[in-house]
Figure 1 (spheres, helix red, strand yellow):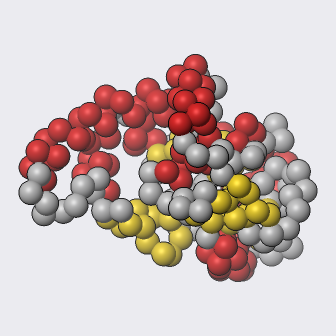
Figure 2 (tube, helix red, strand yellow; figure 1 turned 60 degrees about the vertical axis):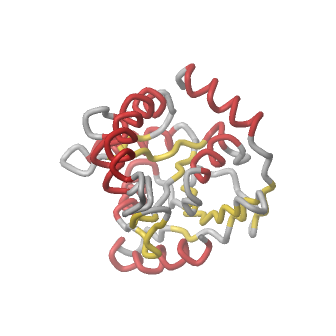
Amino acid sequence: MGKLYTVLRGIAQVITPTMKTEWTTEYDGQPSVFCPNHAGAFGPIDMCAHFPLHAASHPWLNAGMMDAKTVPAYVRQDYWWKPGCFLEPLYNATLPYIAAAILPPVLRSVPGVPVYHDMQVIKTFRKSVEYLRQGDNLVIFAQQPSGYQSHHMELNKGFLQIAPMAYRTLGIALKFYPVHIDYKKRLFTVGEPVQFDPSQTLKEQEQRLIDGIAAGI
């Protein structure tokens, strides 16, 4: 864990309101995957600062946002400003480069898992298994950005590959806990988990897992 992350998390814990947590079912203490809704920019911040298991939970991080060279393209792609707004030319010329200067050092200090979208993706899963082996948890935001202040309702499915890998490597039948973040109520609602079934292929149970997670988000 980097010093910068430790300082920023401490500041967030002080200046942002605390949050309550409601568990639909009792957490069994086993290494698990928590899948929250994004809740704008505050979702990841709240998970790192206020989620009760934050000290032993490691978020998946977009590797493209950890490299100053690629950050501007991601900022423009995700629309950090309202398309067509009066100040769009100014935002387009400044915000991507401000983000490129600030975000990479911050994200690199987070004890998380860089998520690659090319042949390096194996590094993502190996790092994830390493954390699970330590008895820790993963935090994965499975919603796909769809533009200014919005995300697709349909979840990405690629992250589910961690389940058969964890079973083959560690003998763990992973549980996926959906987490609904209600920023206005300052509440985490941790839903009923869905568990990987080693007796089935991932393809056979993929939709069941995704539907269970989506229902709780």
